[in-house]
Image (cartoon, rainbow, N blue to C red; front, side, top):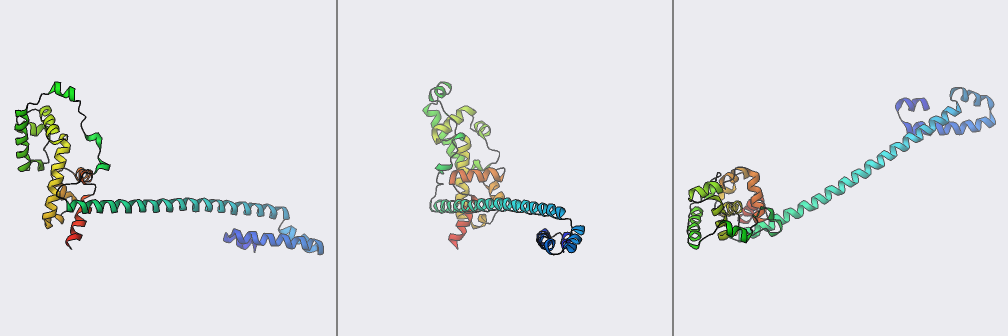
Length: 253
C-alpha cells in the first residue's frame, strides 16, 4: 500500500500506512520475531521513520503555503470589496452632480476637486507695474470677448491665447491680464468654462447629440482629445459626461 500510494503521489495515504506499519511492526516485534525480521528486510524501520518525517515536513510545508495563499486571497477579496464600495460611492456622487447640473443652467463648480495649480498666481503689484489696464481698453476687450463668446469661436479646437490675442489686435500678456480681471479665470480655464457650458446646454436640448460617443462630443466641444474633454468636464461639473448623458436620458424616459 505504501508503494502503491507513493507511485500515485498521495502523500497523506503514504503517511497513513507508514504509521500503521510502524505500529504493527512494534507489536510483531514483541510477538513474532520472524515476521518482524521480514518486515525490517523490506521496509527498514529507520528508513520508514525518515520517510515519515519527510512526508510530515512536506505536508506541513503545503499547509503553510496554503495558509499564506488563503491569507493573500482574503486580503485581495477585502481590497476588491473596498474598491467596489469606493466605486459605488463615486458613481452615486457623479449621478447626484449630474442631477444638479440638469436642474441648473450654469455648471456648478466642483469646489472639492478644483485644481488650484491651474490658476495663474497673480502678484497685484508686480502685474500692475508690468501691464497697466486702462478702463477704456478693458471695456473694449470686454466687448470683443463677448463677441468671441457669441460667435462661439471657442469651439475652434486650435484656439489658444496666442491666436485670440492676434485676432483681437492685442498681445498675449494684455489679453491674459484682461481675462483675469474680467472673468476671474486664467485663459485655459476661461476656454474650458465656455466649452463645457456650451456642450451641457446643447446636450440638454438636442437628443441626437446624446447619442454621440464621448469622442465625438469632445470634438463637438472644441477639444482635440477625449481625455482633455473628460478632465475639463469633471473639473467644472464634478461628474463625467457619460453619467450626465445617462441621467438626462433617464429623466426623459
